[in-house]
Image (cartoon, rainbow, N blue to C red):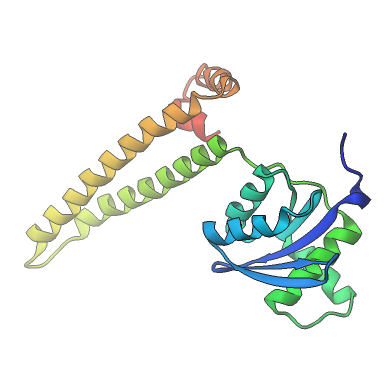
Length: 214
């Protein structure tokens, strides 16, 4: 049976690159954790004494992925919200100062009063696939840059630089090929993905890379 929204214990987390600031309104406590696997594990240990947690945090360019996926895997209800309405909520509440600890308190209050919907988070396999596709795109951009750089090489050290760039090009091609194999393996794991991919590749002009990205 699902938990009524009012029965949740709302928790606000302000996320930065190196730190998690957590505010628990029920206890009126602020706690800081390192933003790494050990810090997230310590946070979860602190939460285990109670159940029905509803965690709210602001989207922070992907930095929120570790803590949100970990807590969701432990059964917490997780909402990743747009930071702008949270900031507007703070201003409307007369809170103009901005610190990480204060932001966590605002986020917790925002969650308790407005009760944003839970965010559907990617499974571990889906996250791995997303990371692989994203990394492949980065390597392809590097490869394109190196290929464009070759005709521009001039001067006495042109031969040396050309060899270096060409070596890097071959390394990038090899890495992309390895990633393609890994991405293909990941995309074949869930049966639904296999079916979707088969449907997409049945369209002329759509190959393995495009279908997996889609």
